[in-house]
Image (cartoon, rainbow, N blue to C red):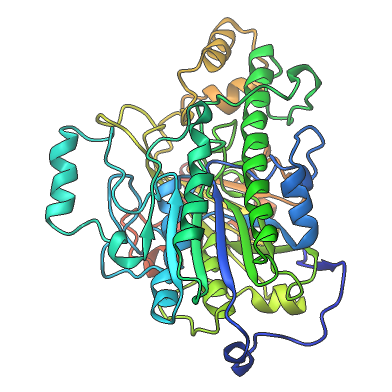
Length: 487
């Protein structure tokens, strides 16, 4: 699966290499994050069922990344990587009720030091202690965070505006109101950076109905029931609402003459609350939409390069003409974006850890431990709790999923779906050939012909976990050799 850049127009020469960056007017940077959106859920990614005209048009004007991965299938760890350019494990952000420690700097801080007006707006930015509803004695814990200096983002940025829960009905409009407030409040003599975080398409789904459940083409790993169709249609409805809100933001930039010198990045923070998605390390859990537009600086293109959300920090700093701190592990994507530079072979990593809960963990929806490594062709998943069954995040208690459970118990559910979603255990290692099996339906970890591939990925993952000082047990290949000798 060789990386390639398919370009609709050519750019003569690089624009931000070396000293040229410092001579270029610093661009505004608008980072737009959707909440729980898998890459498959956008029209420009080949989905003919979903209605996303603004995202599709935006993609045609910039670069669409076909293989962009999140460092976690969960919001808090993923967004920590976006802000720091580092693994969520390396910055101790693998659980929800934790704040980003002062010793770990967010890349907007570097922009602010060099003259940018910076801010976050929209749904809670997930980095300053997502406490509410997730621990006992909420008020006391919130106050402890404040009294002891754990909440740091109001000091790191010029403006912090939060919609604590914008998932109900018309409340979603508050996010674009905050965008306009930021734009009015900012220092007009400075370039700006803003992370604008939408709540859509996070579960529960409450957007106006638009998509017809009966007309949808279900992914091959979706059981075909009326309830499943309605659930997927409702997810698409959420994304259509998000698309409309995003269109308003783009129109604002056009109307105020800001579009030309504003880098707009649209990305999903992690996969949606769907099958084989959020809370898992399968493609729909960690492969997300990534679209980047910078008029007249970045040619319209589509790329299959393997990239990660950990790359955004280095890319934004480089676009602003700033050096990338040594501790940041992400790649600067500007050579790829501006020149179509062929990237070297790349491996990216993702982590599944604790999830939001207001009680002790009862199942793997709220407490699971997984790690994975993704290359150009193969992916390896390491399950640290193989003896525990998978339980979906956010929709385990829906009537849709309960119906599937009843069907499985009564023998009405096709065996392959029973194995996928109701197996009492999971394998320790999963190996997938993403070229021949993009939906990850055939685990090749036990295939003798791919033993060297499997062991090489296990070793690379081991090295990464060592570098990050990961708290999880290392997945050394000897684990597998011992298991095989016992068979």
